Length: 276
Ligand code: GRG
Image 1 (cartoon, protein in one colour):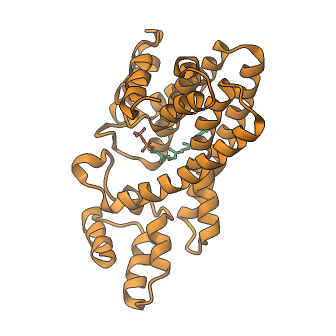
Image 2 (cartoon, protein in one colour; image 1 turned 180 degrees about the horizontal axis):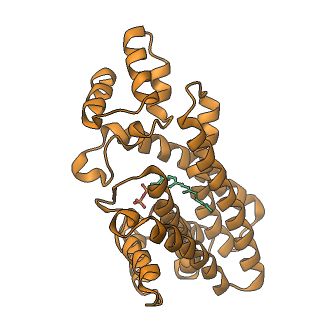
């Protein structure tokens, strides 16, 4: 097993070497753009590591890891459209740099391109990867729909929230790990164990992502601080607000999470003030 940066660099250079078509430019340029913006490469790194844990080489898992990262980036492009987000990884989002139609279609193409990477595997492995991919993609859609539904609800419970983030975020982290395990052709039991570890990791990851929406350093966060608050997202901070015993602070916070704010910086400041 190597250092984390080794796997991140392997993924980055593999992504950079992908032979994307040039035409139509408005389809393929945005794909190259978002993939070149970097990011932590958490999910594909997990795929490579899981493959090694279960006895394969990381190079055998590069295609599966690429599929996971391309899929993740596709979901970010569409998520940014749905949230009308201006920034991603400290740069313009795809729909902001081009337009919404470009973001939709480039995203669609990325979903298919991701899937094509499974064709690099022999039939038994291909079938398992494809099965897991389609199950995961559907669950991510379901999680995203819950997320949208909750924007207009003010009575979201902790268990509803946990189900939403499990589907929206954690299943892909679990699948990333399980794909490495599938490439290594380890036992079903090992595959389930690593998948469940990934679900828990993914839930913890989303809790932190929710927290950073208000508390992230604007210089390094890469997204618009307060983006979740603008969209009335029912995040971890919203659930914490529900637990407040000080009724005045509680109602002030809940108002922020349930109405369209006008000045986002002021609202983020109020959230921070009350929580700290
Ligand atoms: C699956 C068919 C299909 C549609 C997608 C748009 C959508 C439906 C789902 C959105 C899912 C989504 C974007 C969840 C948020 C996950 C999350 C925490 C993203 C941020 O991940 P990081 O921090 O980003 O790993 P980097 O930039 O490091 O890659």
